[in-house]
Image (cartoon, rainbow, N blue to C red):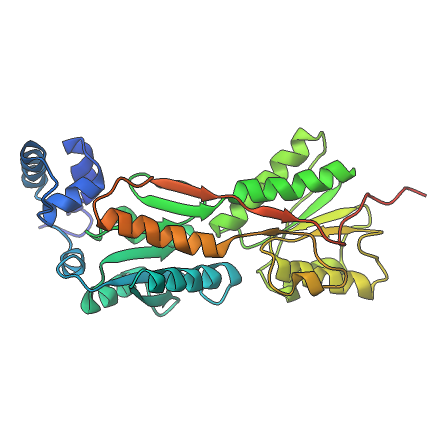
Length: 337
């Protein structure tokens, strides 16, 4: 008698692509009878599908079955500044190209699979996944939507189109600024480390300190909120001369707590944030931070998806350069008494 434990796992589109020696998008085009596929390639892919007994996902077929001039967006943690700003930028860019956007937020009650099924029901021409966490792309790793699909994430993904602001470069700009000012005891106030962006910023903080001959101290992990930054600021070790905060909201809470303790920014402790939220220039003091160009991110996301939809050659991975904005929250470290 068979059981779930010994039932063979169904083949997925990546296995078909690997065995046929083509990309997963080529397999998708064969499934959807795209006219650009050479006959020999089509037959090779179909033969592998027969060998593996591969059955295309029903949601994928529904997604690819009609043209709607609509882009679907699945977004994780839409209330956070980065994902929310990316979604708004995609909506603006799509509108400029004559497309509408239907977005679904993933949360405890709505899984990525639920979101994909919902988008399949209304019909979309292309799909964007704003993916701050590793587990939110599991659905796309297991299969294919059968339509142009882009993931907004900092690291490359095999056989998927990916696009991001360069998180490693942004963290490097922040750390190089502090190190050039003379800081070596730099605390990192990290975001939740299941977020890909937070993990990239933490890794660069560590690498830059080691390269400068300094020993990284334990990371302080926040939750992106100003309250978590405030909590860290209340117990900041006195030896720390600078803090690299993984977002501006945590930097705000940190500065608030330092001010209450009589610790001056930047005379006693320098603070660098990340994002350049609209209010960052009005913090007291105005915040040195890393600016992410979300408008460019939205524009390139839509251009990439529509280029793929039109059968054009598009880069599999693109990175947008961030910018360091130096304001009054950073200075050379205080002199030892």
